Length: 314
Image 1 (spheres, rainbow, N blue to C red):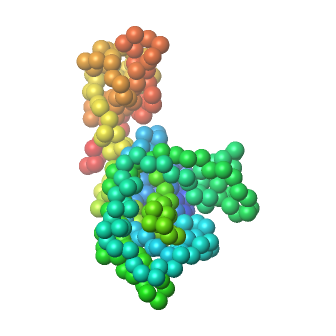
Image 2: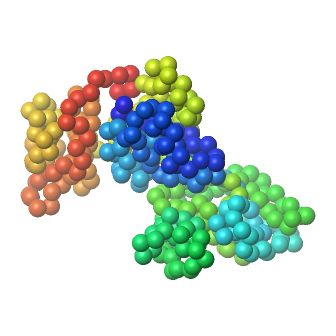
Image 3: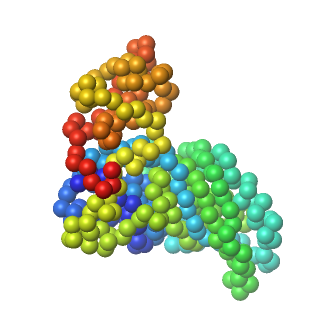
């Protein structure tokens, strides 16, 4: 099987757990995932099977959509509700809707984030969460991330007894964004401690909740011979790429990874971005400009060296 599954990851599982279970369900080893989800976060997790694993790296820059909840009044070591409380700023009165919306609006666009200590970002060869678990501190690298949309989706609720305030939100963001940190920074903008108290991923890499299937549904489809009904083609990960269709003669060169000019590939000019090369309706390679040759193109990734039988998804 070659293709992509838009898996709905349930809470309490790691992304690796999903891959492990799918290997047992589908009786195959070549399975990978794109875009890790924390164990207590549910939502869309793109899974790549067989030759589909070749396009994982090209999916990472695609935007993600989340919905969740921010709570003001306390902060935790993990920046979500599951960590140890490390700071408290009891709210004697709630913030107004206008104050909250202004604070959130400030984070739309290109912003700078400092990754949480409990994250997989590597510093000096070790993951940040390894430092955190060992009780060690280390300077965390700042990173630029892109926030396309960050909006409140519910009325803020003030818990007078606990002196906290919470509301639901929706965020559309780019690669490398930590939504937990976005929640913490929103609180900091308002001058109080905060954390993320709920999160679900609605879309990732162009795959949506509506396309997603559970592990149980995958198992049923496999047992009943209906995998083609839920398995998306490799091409689904390349829909944002410019493309070109080649003939039989060019296919013989492309499948061998040959370098050639952009004219030989049937392009009108040298492209600035990689181009998906199709033959008989199937993506067979990705080509990019070769800076060492005038008008030259070279393979970025050979996806297929032979064509596959078509099914209903192609």
